[in-house]
Length: 524
Image (cartoon, rainbow, N blue to C red; front, side, top):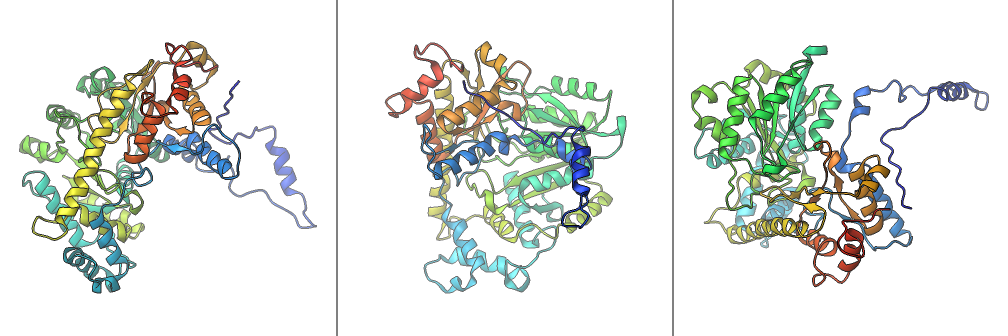
């Protein structure tokens, strides 16, 4: 029988600790030895409450299995297929040529004399280097980010939003969008007891939010997306969550992820208008996580930025609703996760609070300069009259087209497997299918979807994230899979594809469906 032991924290009983402390005080070679200054008992309790499923126990076990494979330990598979995290390049996506050319030039300026590099790449690199101390990306920048890059970000936002002004002074560059999100939450969270700040987050949610709230000691307020309506957001549900939360905390923040992670939905303009009205009526600070804004695939869907909708709703809203929106170089067509580039734009922030924010970001000195440089290329890409335009456009279009193809493919394949249902993947880069497990398996497992994903890893070498790591309605089970390019395509063919796609599929479907093909899975 397959068994799993999930250890979420180090547990040391009170009965054993006095003995350990006594031993630690004993002399070692005649020198008295004291106990540890930092222990599990006296460390920051908020840290112990932090959980991050995307790199949780299953991923840690996957790393162990990879090590075992390298050591020659036999498994039913030869490699671990990691479909747990949206890391495009790790999943086989090739870097965009223009982006890497400019970054290479910035990293090694002597290449500016090399004729192999196009003139527009050199022009971008020189402009970035001229804005750096000592003309080197190894120097610190201003804490808010390099000024000319913030100007380019503002110009990008204006183009995206049809001419609605953007002020570079309201742009803060960051170490990926995650850094900016956590920074804003630090500003927003305060109070004690029933006055403690409550933050509304969608369920399912990206675990960054729950982890950050736990770390900051904030109150997490869950509002549920409607799976039966393609993970739609209903203001009635927002009101329910808000009213219940006001009994024990002070709700001040509403977080929205659009397009959605892990659910892949794209919000309609009407939905965004409803959310903005709700935020205004309830006096909530709005945080719009828009890092997947170019990842929209469904024909009837379109990305609408919260800022654009806010300003088009008129001064009643655009002059009062306080908001921060976020973007990143890690997703969309770029997939440059490791460079850690991102930004946030602030709307209607109190000037005195902004001064405190500048002080706060100054403590970290500055975001990584290579990440800032990469962000500049994303918001200021090659133009039609420049030599890199054709290649850049071809590569960008190919990546987005492949993602759209995979979005449709994953939905179709999952919905052919007994016991799995999957909503249309409208955007982002994930699928979040619902699974049905036999009651016997549910009874055996403390966390059924964790049990399922761990067993899938152990028996087939496929690493997914269980839905419980993102939150889900009670009585439902899910997992998240990254639909990413070459390796993801292989994953799907191998894991779910019809027999004509992959010779190994029969074994996988046997695992999934049982020998008769009519059962979902025989876990025991």
